[in-house]
Amino acid sequence: MTSDTDIELTIEGLGARGDGIASFEGERVIVPLAAPGDRVKARLSRDKDGRLMGRVRAILAPGPARAAPPCPHFGDHPHGGCGGCALQHLAPEAYRDWKLKQLEAALARHEIRADSIEPIAISPPASRRRVDLTASRRKEGVILGFNARGSHRVVDLAGCPVLRPGLAALFEPLRALLAPLMKPGDSAEARLAATDSGADLLLVTAIEMGVGARERIAAFAAQYDIARVARAHPKHGGAETLLERRPVRMMVGGAPVPLPPGAFLQATAEGEAALRDFVVEAASGARRVADLYAGIGTFAFPLAAVAAKVHAVERDRAVVAAIEAGARAAMRANVTAEARDLDKRPLDAGALGAFDAVVFDPPRAGAPAQAMALAESKVPRVIAVSCNPGTFARDARMLLDGGYRLARLRPVDQFLWSTHLELAALFLR
Image 1 (cartoon, one colour):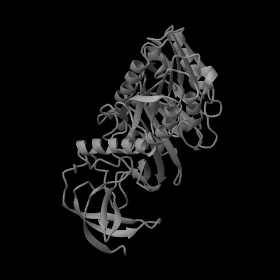
Image 2: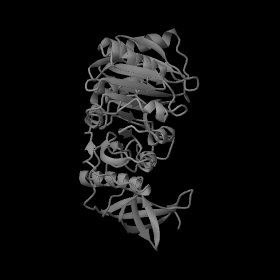
Image 3: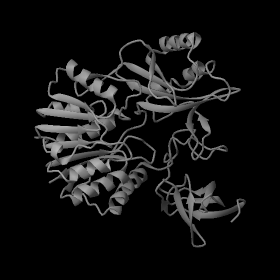
Image 4: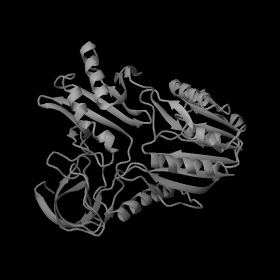
């Protein structure tokens, strides 16, 4: 099949990446940006792995699952549309159904059944409160945005319907700030977060930050009311605060937690609330709770309001210090924190036996070592929070094989129009 062949296809369903799936001469065709029921004219070609791909040339008849994308940067542009979203072309019901099917497929691969799967909690547009942008210096200026799908080319964004408006409004000022600091060929990451203290900016770059650069950054921060600007080197790690106009904090379960530069925040307040409420309800009645992979205490502090003791475990020592500072400020003597790499040194069954309930919220790779230790423990309640249904299902299988049952599961979609899905789950002995 050559790249100049156009044919008509009817989209039969969606694949695991949200791509349309069709058939041609008995072979599966992957059609990005197509919705179930669409009848399209497509140009066929082979990708590097030999898969048959269809690029939509025209939509001959839209299917019932198609919706008009709200963002002008989404879609099949000549040089590739923005890769930040994959599913803006789906109608809400089709979008919701696809996300749930991905969850069901992940569970089925490990033969997992939940007693109850709750309706999916979806964060609305304009609610995302953190974003990692890529900046690239060209002769004509700074390009700022997300990479095009399947490419390292940065798509220059005028705005973003997923982000809180206050963050999206900083795109153009950021370009103006970075243009004189970068020379053609330079690149940087701009990590923005909307905190309770205002916008927080971390620049990940090897650009030299001399006196002139710092003066420009100070003027930028004053003009746009940026709470803090920090800089991290992409290879050396760590972060240097360039200026802090006011302390950067988040109120977490009634505790004012100081945020280290680049500290992890849940993507939306709505998604955080859906996860937090599930965790607190699932732990109801437990007196001693361990919060593993605790982050800034997103679950530890709300749990401290209902439990006699909460022990938070987190790898990053700066984040552990932030939890301890928040506990002191809120006079939460029942919150303790420990710096520990749970991937290398999971809490064993003996240590876990001190708790009535355990919460664990690992990164996307999951926590197989800690899950195995939990499976070997006698903890009556385990509450899992995950940003990857695939690794969740792998770890959940260990718990089930260890004698737990999956009593409840709540899907949470904080990354609107992406292929990502988060969840919270309750396991009982």
